[in-house]
Amino acid sequence: MSRLLSTRTRFAFRRRGRPAPVLGACLPFLAILGLALSASPQRVKNFSTPTPLPPTSTLIVGFGATQNAAGTLPQPPYRLAVRLRALALPGVFVETIESSMFGMAQGFLLAATGRNSKGVCGSDGCREVRFIFYGYGDGAAEMLKAVRKLKSIGLPVALAVEITNAGGCGGVIPSNVVRAANICLDERWADHGRKQIRAEDPASTQILANLRASSEGRWLDISQATQEHPKLRYHDLHTELDPIVWNHVEDYILDELHRAGIPGAPAPPHPVLPPL
Image (cartoon, rainbow, N blue to C red; front, side, top):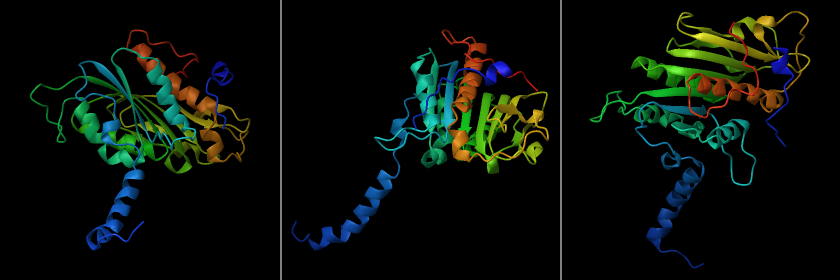
């Protein structure tokens, strides 16, 4: 544990004339349409992943990872996706689904496996896909919705990592998730027990960790909380930008890729926490 918490940070965050009557009548509609389009920077065509995926592919999805407007620094979850894409691993695809796309997330995942919106395989049959998810903020709840949808048609999720603030920490992990981890961006250690994720079926799901920041600014498993760890005064924004948070998320993903035997997948630079 101490090796993990003292590791060198890899994520660095710097922080003219009058219009004709018909056209004039259309202008308000066109203006509203333009605003609607500009408010949705990510569209279906932005997905680089082909559907259906080639057999035995791995799909890594970051829920709630936003690219942000041009000229601004992308959020850490999106930057993690960029780092994972840069590995250029064979058969591994990386996508981000921001809040404006949540309604299309489940359809995209089903299409990746060769299924329609009802979960029925197409004429070419279904594809086996290894799913690796991480959900940030509101994306964590959307990630769990997608997990439950996949469970309803018998599809497993190899890894699910939650990165959430106080209101979203904890909950039950569906039994189709093989491994799961929780990083709670909460400044309070009070009621830490209910902030933990728990397996719906402990025989099916391995809980890797439930992490919270300590008063010393170190990330500890909630199971290690004691009265010696007073309430923090960090704002959630501070913790979500902590590079070590995203080192942890990256390590869980790299460990899963390495475990799956993906050619060229690096072993995680930081030791992964042992299971609880």
